[in-house]
Structures are given as C-alpha cells and as structure tokens.
Image (cartoon, rainbow, N blue to C red; front, top):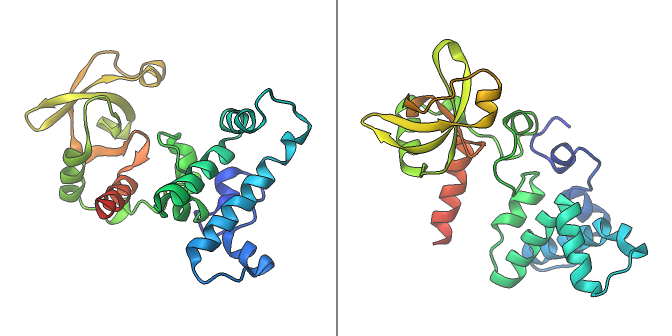
Length: 214
C-alpha cells in the first residue's frame, strides 16, 4: 500500500476500497452519493456479519450498541452513513472511503504511519502560517503536542496565553516520560505540531470543510 491514506492501512486489515467495490459491483447509479450510500451499507453488513450468532433483547438497538462499542470501524461507518443519509452531508463518507479516520485524538505515531488524517502538509506550512492557524483554532482544554529545547516533544493541556506564549498543564504521558510536571508558560505556537493529536495541517483541512458547510 504505497498511496496513503487508504482504508486497509488505516485499519490494519484488508478492506475492500471504494474503487474496488465499484469495479466489482458495477452499481447502476446516476450519482456518486448513491454509490457512497450503497458502499457504506455493504460495509456495515460485512462488519456486522459476526453478530448473527448473538442474541439481544432489542435486536436492532442491541446490534447498533454492540458495534459501536466493540468495532471502531463499524462505529465510523455508521457515523458516515447516517450523516450522509439523514443530513445530506457527504464529508465524513468521503473522508472515510479515502482512508481517513473520523475519530479525533489518535496517537501521533499511528497518524504519522498511516496518514489517517490525510496528508497534513506541515512540510510546506511556514512558521507564520502555523502560528496564525494555531492561535485561531486552539481553545482551552485542547491537547497541544509541541517541540521544546533540543527537539524534545511534550504535550500540554492548553489553558490560555501569556503574551506571545501559550500556557498549559503537562499531560500524564509527558510527566511519565520525564517532562516537567509544572505548568508551562512558554510554549511557542510556531512549535505546535498537533492539536488534540491531529496534525495542524489536518486541522486546517477539517476547519475549511466546516466553513464550507456553514
């Protein structure tokens, strides 16, 4: 799998990609949105096949709850399917079939390996653009992943600003790995690489999509 992201790499198992499904099924649809609905429906059937042997007091509700708790892909498929069918918003469905994950705050190493939030574009984002974007999007309670002296990486829960600098409380992982246990008041917005463990470039992409929807 050289072209990232894709569903098989993001989920760590063989997934029939949207283009493969279209080549196999050859759906006779007038619109791609209809194809997306059919594909998501087929994938939900596949993910739910293992539930045929299980018994629930309320069959439909029980199956939905079980999938949501025990099968992360089924949960994201349901989100994409319902968002498309109920509200006509095709953004989650298109992200999902492109191999991207809909769940935020995934581990940075997994995100980097799978590109599951899309190609972040951080390499072409200059420092001024990064600073402006971080200041625009960050809000109290967000987790900031950032570099510090000597290139070490830390995470802080954003609490506010101190002039030019961002402030935050260290996460448990930062303290566990030897970082400072005290609140920081000197985080440069130019050194922030992730917001809620989503690459800054991907946050920009998601924000642009939200703006278009509004």
